[in-house]
Image 1 (tube, rainbow, N blue to C red):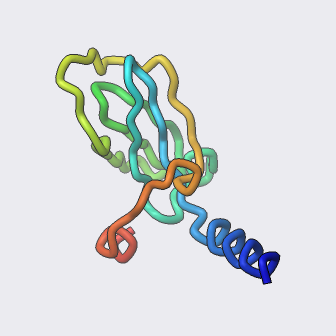
Image 2: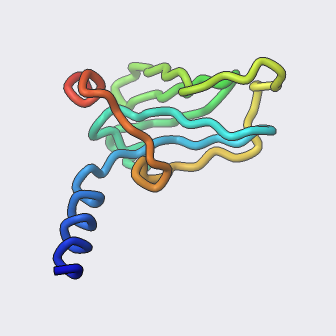
Length: 104
C-alpha cells in the first residue's frame, strides 16, 4: 500500500512539467512560465534575460513576453541578478491558480 502511494505521488509530480525561472540577488524570487514554454528549446525561444526583476523572453517569431516576478523587495537593486536558472516549478512548490492553468 505504501509503495502505491509513492508511485502515484511521483506520477502527479512528473505530469505537471511546469518550469519557473529562479533568480538570486540578495534575496531569491521566481517567475511563473506559461505552460508549454521551454526556455531551453531554441525552436521556441531566441533569448531570455532578467532585468529589474522582470523576465524578458524573446521568442523565435520576434514576440517578447514580459513576466513580472511573484514578489518584490523594495530595498534591492534588480538591474542584474547574481544567478538565473531554470528549474521545475514542483521543486519549489510553486502553485498556479486555475486561471493561470487555463490561460497558459
